[in-house]
Length: 342
Image: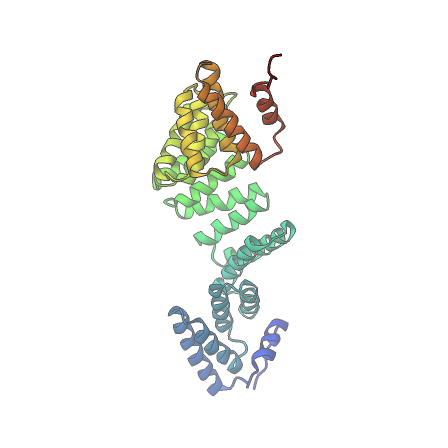
């Protein structure tokens, strides 16, 4: 039997599963188990698929496809660490196969998302970049690889590289709303606001129903110039509220724009809607109080606005006590308590 090179990881898998060699007969049997394992995997029968794939490895410990499929089994079952190990063996046995490298990158991204510590997350993201770079060399025009690679670079704070690969993704699929949306976020993070707006609008032309993107677009408009482009922002936030009527952030932003436009009654209505959706938000309670107090100051006879403002501010402070400026406002507008006359 001819023995070819073997990685340490592959040897580790052999220790776990055992091996009986790889003669012609075993090779055929290994392929049979691999085929059955792939079929069971496609059917969602993960445990049965894993058993077949392990049998394939015992018969042929250099069967890269078996390791790649084992990685798929573990990734689908949520065990990303075992998936990573399987994909890494597949990549070492078959260094010119695209799919294992791509899936390894995806798995590292999942591990980064699940990491509790920032440093650990960054380490996984760097490993994901390494895997995706290998995959993109093997298949340069793969849309998902370029888009995911861009996302990893963005999370690592390397915006120039994130932009480069996102632009490639846009070139590969100019009808992808996601690619334009990601490009807008990259521009936004670099304070390239007009370019961000353009990218967001391109995304919306492809897919209109994107409430989260509309929130990004509105926020970008508010950052433009000393006073922002408030009416443009309001239009974006109103559409977001229509598309996602239970999104408290959309209504909160509508209230903010209405307030900046001095439409105080409409601002109050928007904040009331936001509070009804998220009564535990200190920022919404604070803004509701500001709107009520503004209306009271404009019409001092409306005592109800005064009491509502203090009530909302008190609620905001109970949710987030560290608001010294708000505490000052509460003290300023709380009536002084005087004793009875003698």
